[in-house]
Length: 295
Image (cartoon, rainbow, N blue to C red; front, side):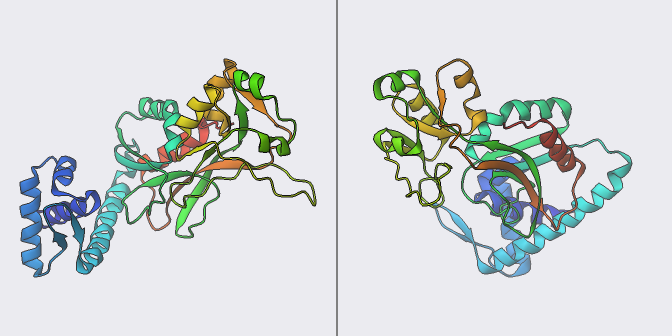
């Protein structure tokens, strides 16, 4: 048991990046976690972390050992899941990564928490490209088609982006009738936090039509400031429909060029193909597929 506790201290330290954060996860002091890792290094006669006063990073030996430790804990969890099949109540911690726009899905998360009160959700909101296995997530929810063959996936729903502006903006600048008209307007763009590129607006073009170059009035890596600035009448934005449902219903934003918007996007939940699905993860996947309605 002491050996497993030491391995757990090492894994949590590696995944959180500090003894302090690992201690919070384990209910221990940072000093206790640090001593456990030092004893483990002494027993293995190898240095697992490069440490200084500002941060710590895994050594090459530490990285290899972390992969093996994760497999050990995955096997333990799989064995526990098999033994718990007679008691199918989902319980335990579920670590999920969502895009920043996923913060708008909190009503669905609240519904899941009410349905499964013994599951502890650990939600990480980021638009960066995470590695499910390396970063220690049980699952990730992302927009767009899945591209990693190591992962299983399930489509949670499709949606079509909306081009919108405030009535006040349209009264001052006019209503664009075709995508070409957007060249004369203030466009508010979303910028990918991973590539730094502006995300394209999915508008249909007839054969032979030139590529439409949209002016950049401003850009942001999250949708919240785009919603706020569009509502304030500062420009036209291209946004997911579930993010602006209330603004459209209340008349603060008006959909534009709907016949010209062509591509649909989708939410997917992804999880490692190598892992057995635990009852809590199965409950989460099924609940999200049933209740997430991004249209």
